[in-house]
Length: 100
Image 1 (spheres, rainbow, N blue to C red):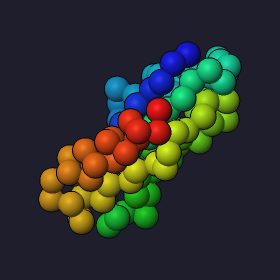
Image 2 (image 1 turned 90 degrees about the vertical axis):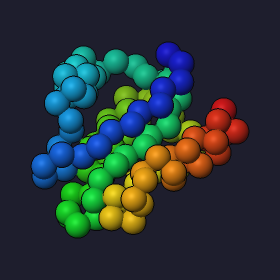
Image 3 (image 1 turned 45 degrees about the vertical axis):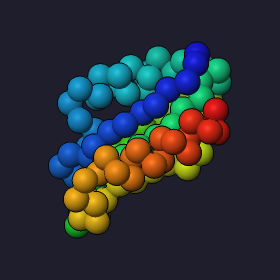
């Protein structure tokens, strides 16, 4: 239950970071009811890859499939467009907080 802010980079061919993989596997296997969860989703990746922000898309899809409700739009930060990726993230978080 509660509010989650999920932030993830994408590795390799659209893969989750190693530290997030066990959590997502557990959610997929145990299929908990996440209908009491509201979340925001922020992804970091490079549009030079066809799997741009693939990890956050997987996370977003899984949480929604388990009943969680995303608050606001998913932010996908392209490192080829933002030298300092924290800048768009800070702006997004300010707006996201206002939606809560």
